[in-house]
Length: 332
Image (cartoon, rainbow, N blue to C red; front, top):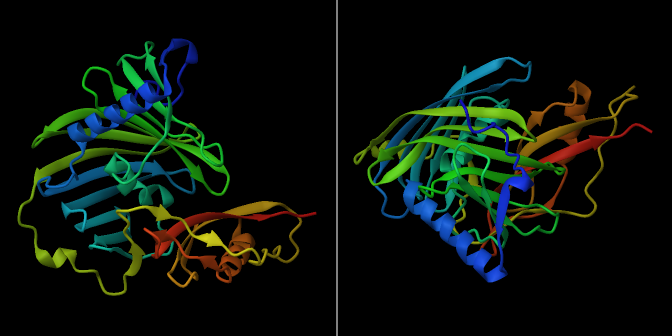
């Protein structure tokens, strides 16, 4: 798979900037909206579809893991996704206000969990960006324009690159907080027609230039009458909020406990966890996404289970929200 150099690195000497703050904002918004009209198969009033993709990523033991992603979509409030990696299976069902998730394992791979984000291609329609610059690239096989946002509160920036000829979205960079900031970049290629849209059939994502996952869409077809039972939340599923308005993340309480070092430990480590903060501000469904070692993992999970938060919100209303945190252990 050849996504230019497969790294989201742009040579500043090869870029020609567009000037003027108002001109930049207007042009960047036009680029995003044109790309969305071209490729967004989940836009309002879009036809229902069935999508299947295969994907691969590097597992915990540096082995190449393979999986399958399947999605049936009728609308943003009625869809079903299934992600399978070997014997590990995740089902997600979207309703008007919620996402219902059922895992058959507490060890669901983080790379596989990012497949829905990769397949969505575009940020939510309610999401707004303040753009700082637009640059024309002249040193790539495909001429492109890249729009970069102004730095956020933690100096984070987003970037979107578009094919200058077709206007299709070729790449996007999204800062991630774990809580340390990293760059998560996704690339799209091989656009093919589906109904009135052009959707990419190959895609790959990198974190800080390290390949995380790559996928190929092997089926994308119209499905006007899927079985209604597919959209019933499965028994035992955990509820997450689905926000189409203005989201706000959970805020940790100021006196949350610090983790204890494992017994007899004399080394530093860290553990990355994913969890759901429910509408009462309590943590649930705590999962390890990056291990720091058996003793550290156990202490990290015990610690965050005691944490409390101000819940995340959607248009100021509390919703269950998934977050990722990094628990640091420092030996003095």
